[in-house]
Image (cartoon, rainbow, N blue to C red; front, side):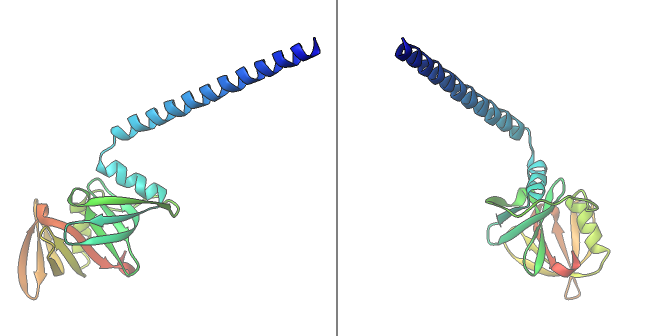
Length: 178
């Protein structure tokens, strides 16, 4: 009788444990699907802001150029990647973003320009020399003189170079200026 009761208790215990495992697995699957649905609604700007929140390190490839560092700011259409000696402002849609699994601690954003155009206007007001990377991988070094509706003018060696926004990939500035 005692042995039968013990067997019955063991069976009940095993059934409870199995049910608990199944519920935990279902809950984990539901959580995964909920996160997947949330992520499907994101755009590039949202994804970049999450990179900032998590303190993600990335490798950004723009064809001929690769930039690696921590994403420290994200606007609607650009993000800023901080490297050892400089900061790189990169158009989100002009690059392939590889996210490292290492998180270094997130950042709260405040005070940055909401769009790449506004960010370029801020840079133009400083008259600082920057390096611009354009679509074919070329670098232009000079100061941004004008930010217009769909292009910018760069003063390079006393020449005015017109760069359509669609051709602009990244702007590199010394880290001290960020």
